[in-house]
Image (cartoon, rainbow, N blue to C red; front, side):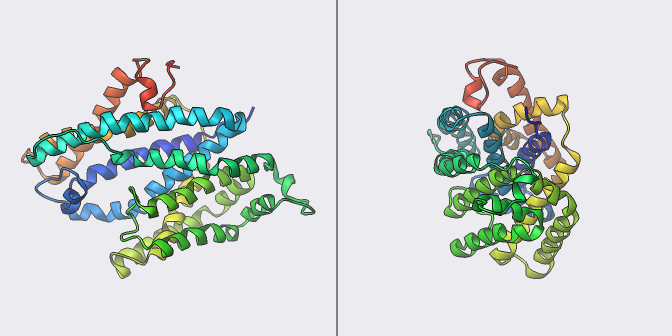
Length: 361
């Protein structure tokens, strides 16, 4: 039986946590109201500096991690078993969220704006799940081909005679230069679609195709095996230096918006940095991880409801914006975890609606 990759579990939890922090931060930007967020009367512009660094890689990272999860799952299942399982885990929560969760926080937004309230189903922040399920359907034939030509060890990459192309491609991952074609595809996507800004992922063709690439290469990186992960370890400081350097150039010299091709390169460097340092320091089990890895998905589904609830009350308080930010973040996180622990986790028929198995392990 293969060893579980705890670092990937940790990165998934951290990515969803960063998503929550990012959405809280939008409430303190003056433009947040334009994308349907409840915003504070006083903004906190300097908060956007770290958020702008985070924003170019937080969603791509989740797509990469999701593709990795499919690779791990397909090792132990046939495609005929995996598709119904992914329908239960992704499609069911997506449809439930569209008709039950998104209308709830839409209602809170209407109340805040003083509009006449009505029922507004839709994908909302759950657009990500809809994309994931489409990716599984589109890429499953290619994933099956990779599974049949799986790289098991470095010995698979030594004999080049009659080696399938996919195994030759895996061999390129011995060097950071092997990542150049990968990054080039992301740059090409950004150049062809020209998103303005680059971070406009939700329900756009840019978000769809960027996610498709990230989902596939997440699968591919895990499929490559230790040759890829050992390369990341050796070059982790290079990826960090490139990511940080490009961010500094973007913020100090280029301004906003920076050229999409540079933002795309920076995004990939951050993603590779996270995977490299995660593999270096997070690949170990813990009770906290076991709990959070179960809670992360339901928290992602419901967090906008508690964010909007907290915003309605906390933004009325005469407090410094920094204190409001801390209170809103704490309220949102505590509310989500409490609802998960007291309701979602303990009621068996509710669990599948949030992507969990019926039985409570």
